[in-house]
Image (tube, rainbow, N blue to C red; front, side):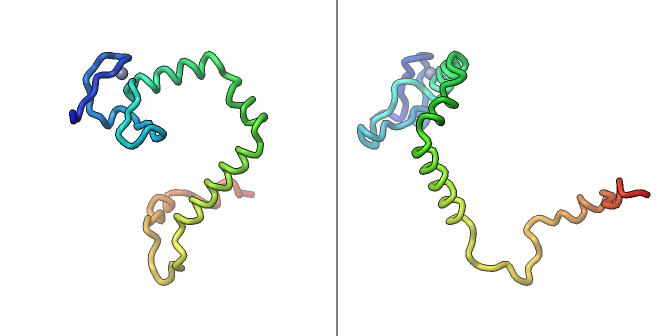
Length: 108
Ligand SMILES: [Zn+2]
């Protein structure tokens, strides 16, 4: 099996990674247009249909709520359960903040 494929849009021969898979057709089925062509087509479509997303959200509040719940669950799962005790912060922001005059603006 070839590791490259020709795009039906730009006619370039590109690595398979440039072609998203079609999950409903199995893990080896790839779309016919490369990511660049698909992104360009999506941007054109969105510019021609600027209100579509807002209207879709208004028509599908239950789906939106489900997506938001799933996103919150993923975020919660990504947060470590172990408390951070006795360790320094991963990023030391003190030097960056040292130049800030926190009392600035509170002059009387
Ligand atoms: Zn292409």
